Structure formats: structure tokens, C-alpha cells
Image 1 (tube, rainbow, N blue to C red):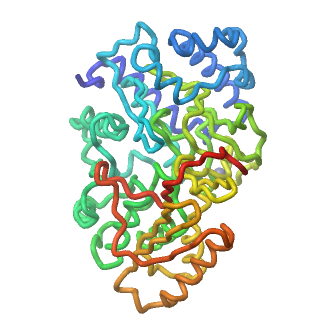
Image 2 (image 1 turned 180 degrees about the vertical axis):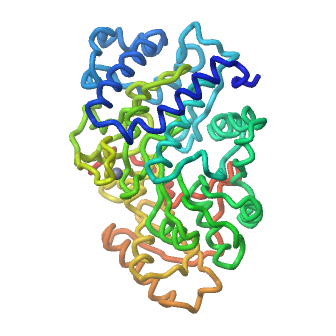
Image 3 (image 1 turned 135 degrees about the vertical axis):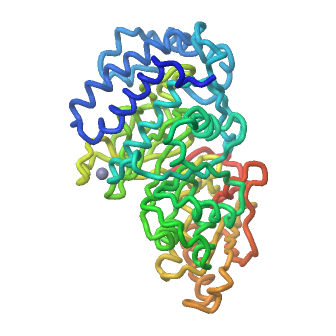
Length: 463
Ligand SMILES: [Zn+2]
């Protein structure tokens, strides 16, 4: 059933989209706070109808009357990934939620067991507000763009429901002609062929997909692919990929921080390159190991609250496994929402070293820094693999056409080795080697992660 055929739904969606695009750009901090407080109270009230939340609120003696302002958020108990997983299917939605109208989205399960939650059409459509606001904040008007999205359109995947599903519903509108959806499992040359015909102003996809397309663009393919802006999400974007892609496409990458659970973007890069929270959509906290909020400047686990939506509410949810550092800086771009200084990757891919040293994977993309310093684009792809606690393998894929251009491979290998050795100490062996390719995930087609560790952390998290 096409939800846009329902005039009430269509009107509400249009109203939302018109307002959502401008709120964080035009509103000051105070006005946003009043808005957040109202929305927080509303979503907590909704959560009280959901069994797992109701039980947790009762257990912690939380009443809806305790939540009057966004500052009261600390009184709300934290919901873990396991809590939500155990509550599926009946206990993560209100008893009156119409499941026939609901949709199930499932997280990738990169952290082990996948998690499924419910959303509805309104929640899905509303999430686009964060995309449009991000574009607006970067000087673009989505209504004037030809937009391409290269996503993972498999059943139950968020891309499928949030992007492909909406596209199907609006495909009768003229707007649909300005949208092109492509699948990430396609060969980069196929993607470029499609994009070359479509000539998008804007491409949204994963960093790894852009990197592999950039490689072929450098070989002369996709000459008409000249976007004004690129966005990435889903995995952290390292400096090397960013620079390689921006240099090739001749435009900026704006990275968005998003997750399946919120459905919308949580934060995005502004013109100054800083990550602003979409704080009219999501509240973001950094928590310590006892779930206490940390002040700006301190590194903690991310905790998110989605301020809208039906189905499974996301209130003080700590299951994202990312680490963040919040900042109290004011940004010169004029947007007054909080800034996230650092977003560090998935805990499950942490590098674990002798002596209980655990580092987030984001701290191990040193290859990118070395290549950046050497000013070379000779390496097409790289990956850091840890199979033993005392050994790291650094895999590099060399661009054949550039093998004899710029700094020699010996120099690159030596510098890469030095950088890692310095980081991990002498008790860990570093092996840098050239490989022919780094394979993407055969099941999902998702680009292979930059850092993979098969060593389980058994000593917990240490700074
Ligand atoms: Zn800014």
C-alpha cells in the first residue's frame, strides 16, 4: 500500500519536511532546547506504553512527570542492545501498534547478533529531514539536485525500507526522475556507467564504494560523473579515503554519522568539517562504563535518544558500540547544535594488544596518515588484520599504473611499519605486505572494514 495516497499522511509528511530542513540552521540553542524538551516528554510518554520500557521505568521509579526538560534526561534509565533484543517482537512496541502497517528493520550484526526493531512509514519519511538539513547546511537545496544513492537494498535492511521503499512509493511523482538507486554489490565500472548516464549532482553511499569508483575514474572512466557533493555513512571515513576521493571527484565529502536504530542521521559534517548533532531529531550523550554522562572532552560510549517516531522507541539507547568525544566549541558555520569531536568505530573490531591494551579500530588506520604525509595515491586499498594478539598484518593493494610513480613501495612499507611499531610497541610484530585485492563482504557486498580483529577482548576496555 502506498502511504502517500492517504492525504493526511501526505500533508503531515510535507509539513514535516518543510520544517525539518531549516530548524537547526535557523534556531538558536535556547529555542532548540524548548523544542527538545517538548519532544523528549512526548517520546517518554510513548515509551511508557512499550513493555520493556515500562518495566524499566517502573524498576527505576521514573514517572512521566519527572521529565519536564531535556536536562532531566539523566533520570531516564539506559536501554541496552540486549534489552531490545530480548524484547523482540512483542515487548518492543506498544500493544496498540498496528504491525501490518509497521516495518521491521534489522541491524547488520557486525557486532555479533543482529537486532530487529519496528518502524512505521511516518518515522521513515521523517528521517529524510536530517538528509535535507545536512544538504542545506552545506549550501545545497535537495529539490534542485539529481540524487544517486548506492546502498544495500536487501530485505529487512534499513537501506531497503528507508530508501528503496520510499522510492517505490514516490515513483509516480516527477521527483522520482531525479533519483537513481544503485546496489553496492555492483562492480564499480557498472556503477560508473550508470552514474555517467544519470549525471548526479549528489551521491550518497559508503566510503569504500567511493574509493573503488575513484580508482576507475582515475583510469578515465565515468567522465560525466561530476557531483557537487558526496556523502558517506555507515563506517568511519579515514583521511586517505577522503583525500583520494575528494581529489578524484573534485568535490567535498560530507560524512554523516547514522545508525539503523535511529533511522535518521545522528550527526553530519558542516561546511567547516565538524560533526554537528541533528539535535532536533536525536539527543546524544557520551557515557562512562556506569552509564553516567561524561562532560565535553571526555571519551565515552555513545547513547542516543530519538525524539520522534513510532514502533520501537529509541530512548537513552546505549547499544551502538561507538565511542565519541563531545565538544562545547562554538562552530563558525553558525549552527548551534552540539559538536561531536571524535567518533570512533565499533568496539567489536577493537585491536587488543598484550597487557590488556584495547584500542578502537579508528586508532589503527595509521596507513592513511602515512600515505597522506607522503602525498601519494599509490595505494588503492588497505586493511589492518589482527589474527594473533602479538601480530598485526597491514595489507596494501597497489595501483598498478602508479607502481613507479612517487615514493617507492619500499619507502611506503617502511614508513607504515614504523608508524605501527611506534604505536603498539616492540612486543607486537608488524608485517606489511602487498596483496592483489581486499575482498568485500560476499553476503552483503559491503566494503571490507579497514580494521579487522579476530582477537577477543577479555580484559575489558582500558583507556
Ligand atoms: Zn559547523
